[in-house]
Amino acid sequence: MPLTLMLIWDYDTPTGFAVSYHSRTADPMLEYTCTDRILALLAGHGIVSTFACVGKAAEPGDLPLHNPAQIRQIHAAGHEIASHSHSHELLPALSQAELRQTLRDSKAALEDCLGAPVVGFVPPWNRPFHHPRRLAFSGKDWRAGGGRWRHSVSSLCAALAETGYHWVRVHYRPVWQQLGRKLGRRDLRPLALGQYHGVYTLRLSYCGYDQTLTDWLATLADPGRDTAVVLYAHPHAIEHDNSQHWHHLTRFAQWSSDQRDALQIRFTTPSAWLAGQQQP
Image (cartoon, rainbow, N blue to C red):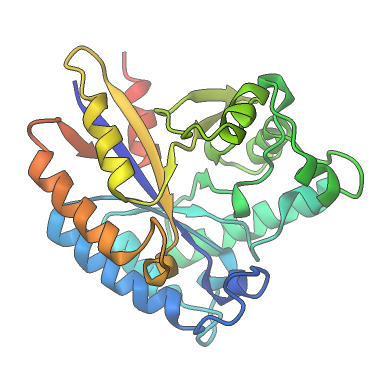
């Protein structure tokens, strides 16, 4: 049975840089130049992935805020396009009306750009973390909401269902996993699939492509089980000295090519994988 890998890129663009502490001083063209390098690498290794794009980047207009041509190029190369909100908003701080507005605006901008449906969503900063149905509680979300939890994973799914989305990448930690992290335990796990209000939740497995990831993936090979893993990174972060760096990405791409047969590795997108899960 295959080891299925879903790579998701958070395509923030300068719209996201403007509200991200770590990227405010970044070259406004960095996301686009890094994406060009990534697309060439993925094509060379036959890797399909997903790019979650802020809707504003898909709108007609000039660089650096708008780059609909590159989004069309990504789609034409066979990668899935998902929404990353319209302007990289912090969702736990939004009202219900504001949340639905960014979901609609982003979807409309991306679909107008591509002439194709967009059914996936990736929350900026992976938030909300709050998911009481899984005993995951977030003080950060409470503070962002002005002293209350405006949104949870489940309520986000309700808004996504109303606005035409089918899947969402989520990130939350139940209380025992939060405790484990404080004790220094690594937070590695295969995909946990959920569903709320008809929207599928794909729980994040790992950020980046370093040695820790490949060592862990090698332990997951099981001929009797189909295991899926959700990974994420940012295109501009291939220039950062962390697990998303270009060095790790190129090594991971070569490792996956070398181990493709032995570990039965296959790359896919969330929409393609979910379609396969729904087959009788």
